[in-house]
Image 1 (cartoon, helix red, strand yellow):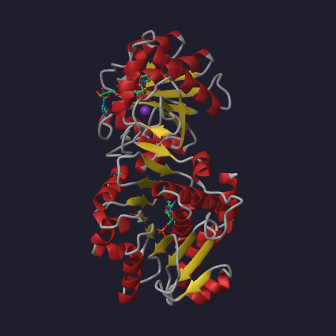
Image 2: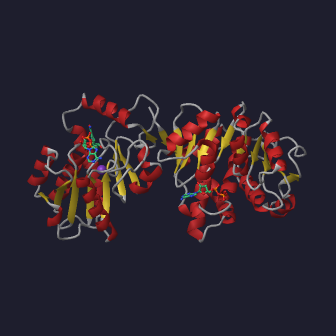
Image 3: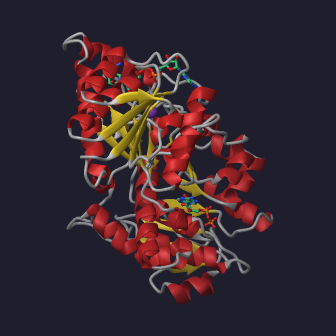
Length: 481
Ligand SMILES: NC(=O)C1=CN([C@@H]2O[C@H](COP(=O)(O)OP(=O)(O)OC[C@H]3O[C@@H](n4cnc5c(N)ncnc54)[C@H](O)[C@@H]3O)[C@@H](O)[C@H]2O)[C@@H](O)CC1
Ligand SMILES: Nc1ncnc2c1ncn2[C@@H]1O[C@H](COP(=O)(O)OP(=O)(O)O)[C@@H](O)[C@H]1O
Ligand SMILES: [K+]
């Protein structure tokens, strides 16, 4: 069984798991577990409960039922709880409404709420939602947005209403939450795309579900990275730890070479070689890197990183072709992706692991628009090209060419959106590949430490790529210790 705290299962699997448990517990028991976890979290976000105004936004399904039961628990502790129905006929969860009323709460109209609530509980839609919110619910999502802008805390029940649970797509109006309390397991829609932005802090309440099959996505943790990260043993030397070759940068863009080799120096390999026209800049910045002017002259390596700052002229294309013609793991980035987009057979015919690290615009050149379903986008390109795809962004998604769950990395911060940080990432992943780590795990581990370095850099001040590089050793240390 996979871990419900880090695995995200599709709605279909969650429904099946719920049915399995419901067959063995008294009616309503699962909802009571869910609502108890939700109420606990609501109490945590409030300074005090007694006398505090709370608004529940309640749809007609079980998601609304959870909100009503949690609201009843808050009302029993003295909160002033008002529920507003997001459906015209006020057909909300009967037993939940009875519980709320018994505790002193009331069902009211939006217009009746005079005092801004300290807490808004979003129980409009959960995993039963399809498409964007309908008008009656959408108007409550807008109200929640306005209260939030004035300082109310919004807690989403299971997932922010209007977010697609499996993809993270938001097709119309949706709630933005500060905290999402997910029941039973994560959902992919809480981890990627617009859903990740809407969800805020995500917490899983274990309601005893278990899953026979693999999840759709796995959240990458420091513990997983620590397990994957190679450590030197007594019989190792610099070669056995893996030699990584960096074919990046040019006279015009020496920075890509400096940042790429720098990233590689924080990886687990024992030796970093550089091949290209920026060797003087690399030598000055990193005396431990051994350099040559071309791929052909570089000497033996166990993995190559190729592409950033290379340009797309004949010389650059030669370097990419030579590297791809080897039977070694290769990471392709930036200009390398442009070259491969012109001739996909260059990667499709490879047998050794190939990792592509596109941002959205590079992805579009390779496989068309990313679209709202980023997991599907990464999977699609990985399958079509027979490679591992690392799709960059607020959340990094890594898909292999097989059916294995995708990895999602959320270690990063938006401050990483600055020129050259991708070059650092390519170097550290290349080093992991040279150290013998399989491609998806190398990409996931690299993205995790890179994201952590970005966060540390952001805590220290404005982020530029060389400062991400400066924080990379500390990021690795705190991840793998
Ligand atoms: N089934 C279970 O055992 C458990 C379910 N739980 C809760 O139940 C939720 C799922 O409940 P439901 O299956 O009742 O579904 P929801 O409560 O998510 O949705 C209910 C109804 O909303 C309507 N709807 C769909 N799309 C809409 C849209 N775009 N705009 C407006 N209305 C729309 C539909 O008529 C749908 O039947 C979970 O997310 C979770 O919160 C928890 O209580 C844990 C246990
Ligand atoms: N909004 C964001 N939030 C978090 N990380 C981001 C965001 N935007 C970009 N990043 C990260 O910053 C890095 C940028 O890489 P890339 O676009 O290749 O830059 P460059 O080509 O200039 O080196 C990637 O690791 C990406 O995941
Ligand atoms: K919800």
